[in-house]
Amino acid sequence: MANSRQKGAAFERDIVKRLNGFAAKAGFDFSCKRNLDQYQARDLCDIEIPGHAIECKAYKDGFWYRTEWWEQVVRASDDRIPVLVWKFNNKPIRVTLPLYAIAPDLPQDPDRVCVVFLEEWFKILQDNWHRYQQEPADELP
Image (cartoon, rainbow, N blue to C red; front, side):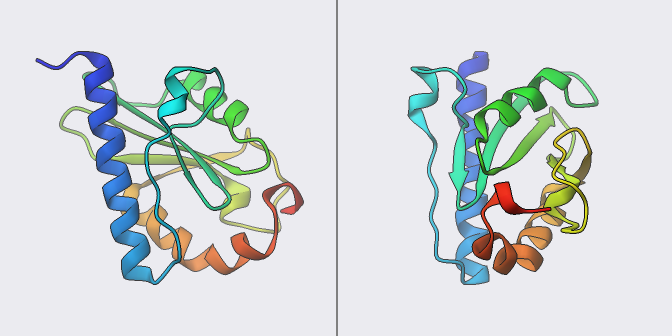
């Protein structure tokens, strides 16, 4: 059985692979990789894509994300959109993100979040990518 660090690294690699596949299919000009500096310094995200800081969590048991996971990615996000990608064994991958990442008319409040499946987040990225590229996250409403 893999230890928790190995399990987390494998999940991060899986998410990187999925993100890069999504970007290539959508015609987006980015490629991401794991942020290995996260093991050396505090408050760094696991993965970065333009305008987004992504934290990944994979656990054996559970049903819902933990508040401290969300707080961790918010601290690491700086002026980027925080994104928490998480899963438990035998459950689908879910994504927590701030509502302002979806609805530009909402205030930029990291405490107002939604949870979607990974495939839905990819649709959200595709629908909003032009806006993410035009406005820095700290200027999003």
